[in-house]
Image 1 (cartoon, rainbow, N blue to C red):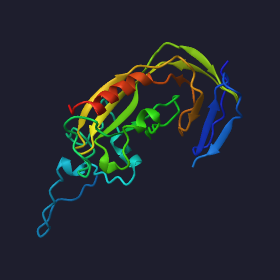
Image 2 (image 1 turned 90 degrees about the vertical axis):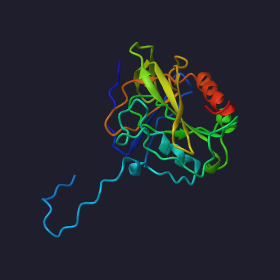
Image 3 (image 1 turned 90 degrees about the horizontal axis):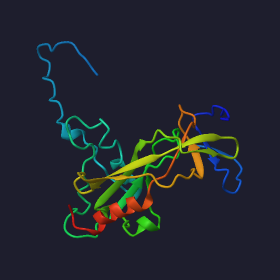
Length: 237
């Protein structure tokens, strides 16, 4: 039976841990057009409209985490700037993506465990990724963005959590986009299937609108790593 959850303040993060692991006490932490009249005599002529390219966001990364600006709306989202193919300009201080590998890369991933977790691209710096990650943004050739793609309709399991919480588990697949940091251009895309049908160890709901109603599987880690590794270690495409 689903247990109703109380509505929490907007600045509250709701964290629950899976009951099938060692019991953990429920932790709740505070989170922190303009229109005018016709032109009259003597008025200065209107300024020309800026070209679409002038609206591109120009990055100025000071830290590696600042490169997450490239992980905005995905290729399937209709949120481009005017008729441009990209909304973020390149970073000329970065080396060109050219020639044979390795091509240093910064990998960002948004892998929500449930429907009420807001998009959040985190820099991946664990053992699988650190070998590709240089010391500074000026050494990065590729920026990789992993995001949710689609959800299955079949209920795979029911996940129970300490502190009261029982949610259906659904399959979640992912997709990734790879950008050349020097130019800001997209250079590759790929799909990542769902991983194991295990319940998330913990679920965090930080949406000011939605309550946690369902949870999702993680990604197939090996498929993602292999796909990115081919780009990092191989010749530029």
